[in-house]
Length: 356
Image (tube, rainbow, N blue to C red):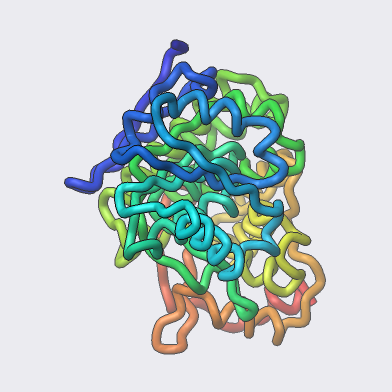
């Protein structure tokens, strides 16, 4: 087996490993060890299944394996899709010791995790993320859910996986646009929690875009390390975990206003981070560095044209809103973030009007 690195998300009895390496799919890793019962259902989509489904089945030797293949796209992240998974579980006669395995990107992981949280009030599930964004962000931390017609991720549950298995070789098949979208979340970690990592990203952004194996492995490991530490401290986003949403209040609104799938999540978050940094009123040098790195990653630094009132209305449905008051993740400087409901309303108005 190739060299692997493991990070543990420390949550007491619900702690679990994030295993990172190359060549892990196809039998070199005993995933069956994390399936407590005899039955498992792999949830994947029509893009990922031809690439990796057979390999994961090999990793589950000795288990009864079924699969369900979903259509690919953010627009299918709905209750109806979750219902199709639940229907499959019922048809298979799945019991409480069954395990759901999410094989795909963030959409598949969120949907499968939510289905696992709902079926028989909660069964085990496993994350096998195949996109950079899912590997560094959505597969870790137990956030699951689907979109509502009025907003992104408004329906969901916290439900931690048994393991997150990251095979970096899957990124060889990832389209350039999706790789760049994943880099937005990597940049986010440096911006909110690690100035040295941010500086490393500045020095290595070309290697990351060029898919250099060692650079990608280091970026994935450090991103997961930061997220694991934050989730271990604050599992249900009662405090510090909210900083992981840097750029997301603006970004989710962009996704909603443009129509799910028009802007990839990472693209919307990239523009959202620039907007949040402007609202933060940080030192000009830090604002310039963030904007420059996002540009170098091939990501947008400005949102699409959206009516300011529509933009603000979409943000008002953000999950961080409390007492009908917007809360933003802002930064003091690169590497240090905070959550606040105290912000410059005139500056916010200017930022939204500039997008209109």
